[in-house]
Image 1 (cartoon, rainbow, N blue to C red):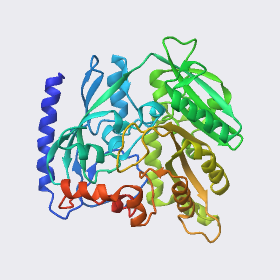
Image 2 (image 1 turned 90 degrees about the horizontal axis):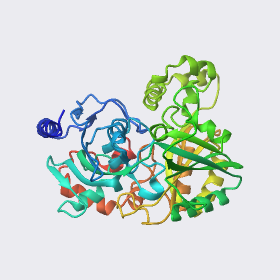
Image 3 (image 1 turned 180 degrees about the horizontal axis):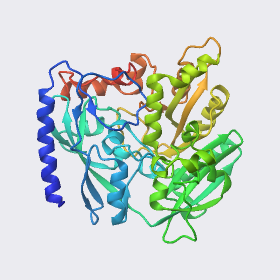
Image 4 (image 1 turned 45 degrees about the horizontal axis):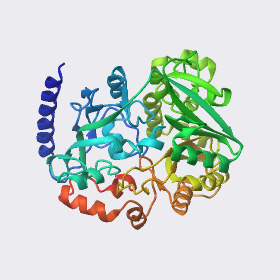
Length: 455
């Protein structure tokens, strides 16, 4: 389909969506009807019809000369990467999981191993077309009359409006990525090295293209550096029998195609496929490769969550209940050793993912200090509750520790802040002003109600 035809389809989809939105009765909850989700804030199924956004899942154009793309908001990064790689380009930041949507990563934040240089996905957005809470279609940029909405949209989680089309920056790529896995026995040494690489963008005189890290325990932690390459002596395959995160412990150098590097974490949902037995060699051979995907595992978790199958088995066995500890947090790089010491002692879950980042601009609803090196710490699993403790015991401990270390917590999962705490951390004053301007009738949920109260 030609670019002109795609843009015509987009305009028709915009008008149809506007009419659908206007037809929803006042006071009726508005939710998106989406096939996939990467959120871990569970809520009961709603009987209210979802807003159909199925017409907003395509890449409208790629301008290789300008290094930009026009992309609809519900487009998955899997489809976006497939459209840009043939041009030798990729988005500035590609979150780790294939079915994360561009609009979702911008309104709900995302991160990956280019974030040490390029910040978060929303920092690569040049133009944002939105359906606002009051039913308008507006286009926001850094310097037009809707600039306040442009800067306030990240971390608003669809409570100010929905992205329909985004113009984004692209970065040039090369065919292969050479990896170096650097082992550290001490968290302070790792944090120092990660901070220096984040600041300089260089390691041993070589420009670094990607940086992340993996912690297997207090004495075994790695920084993984990626360097673009035009050729490779071999390429590893972690889409079938091979398991990427295990290779970090086994190899000091590795080579992947650029596409396999971008999706290196998706096949095993980092390491969480182990909960389904998919890392067992026999099970892995029998499990079709096309179902070794994060969205498949997430659906399985959602099914278990709904019917409480594993919890029932554990209660029958007389075991204490387990708490879901599924979070991503950011702390300043110099505070990382303190957080890891706390986490090893109080939570005790591994592996742990590390990803350095620096915000390039001020984004009020997720107010990281501009230019300051932070490290995202990701941990996803379950922990047995100590006797007599409340169900949210570990998550509440983590929230308090993150605040103590001058950090922030992503809101894609459970949160337990009081209303006053929440708005202190996520700039309630700016949010209320934007809400009053773009959703004065409060047709969309309030951010606190959605992310903490689970409405």
